[in-house]
Length: 431
Image (cartoon, rainbow, N blue to C red; front, side):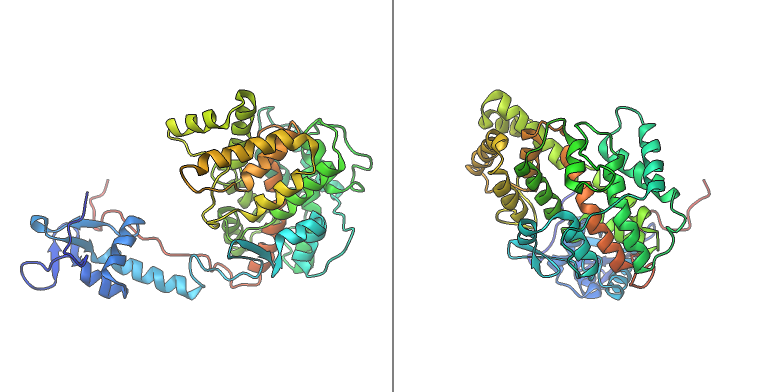
């Protein structure tokens, strides 16, 4: 229902001149101007709260202006104070990733430059400890890996990669009696073992590399879980770069879930499980699968224009384009595309991705995001559509651990905003 306001956005005063209205069913009602004064904002901002679902407005008597429930407004005031107390719902202090002016940085270092120079395990270790150890290799502990392998192998054949990773994390946790030790040293030990456990617990599609038990680089072991195609060095470098580029991206939805779990002092396995649960949605980690299917269709039909038109005609957004944090190009996509240019098998998929971007750009300025770049990697290596989701999850686990380490140093349970209750006011009849 549309709100009717005066020209300046404020609701008209009630006819009785008191500045408030009273409704026997809901209690005290406030005008737009009174709400603005109580919240300390402009009248126009009040309607921004309405559009975000944080306030509910009703048309005043005789259709004059809008009124608001005083209890709901007061709850929003209290919520704002509480958010300020722990840094704000959307401004949680972190020293891990900065996104600024179309670029992003891990602890102040350009993330794309790190991906160009170092491997995933090296960058993860540096992110956690501040020390770069060239040649770092993570090894899965035997007990945890055996538990994860047995549990994952018992899952239904149709289980998705994130299902398997979640189950592997839970099984590894059950096998670790020291999981509740949240000291930095213990958490780092857990992290160094958990990531290779997640990778090695996945069923192998391709030929396993020699020394698969931990001597082979993590990237090579992960490749064998993604495709039956034998890897070349350029492809492995592209996969390793993708892992580094995806380690962290500020407070994405899954990362926030990890910090909430860590705030409640959940152990690292549980915190990672929380991130995996959120990541599975099509708007987050699974988005690359949609881009994979689109690129496959473009290659089959030989035309990006026809595929883009089909998406738009069906009311679907074109996958792999645009990112709300980057008005221009996504630097992760740019860096990964550059790596993929050296992979001969990726040429056709790269051309298809650029055609999709160019076709859409005729009407709206959207740039390729990292999901489209991941799709080029997965399509060119004959990986399943879910492969990008697996890469995303494995990569982001290192970032989640970094955030858990950070959150363990904060006040416990600080991630506790107040709910803006919108139900019926008491007293209500007993059901």
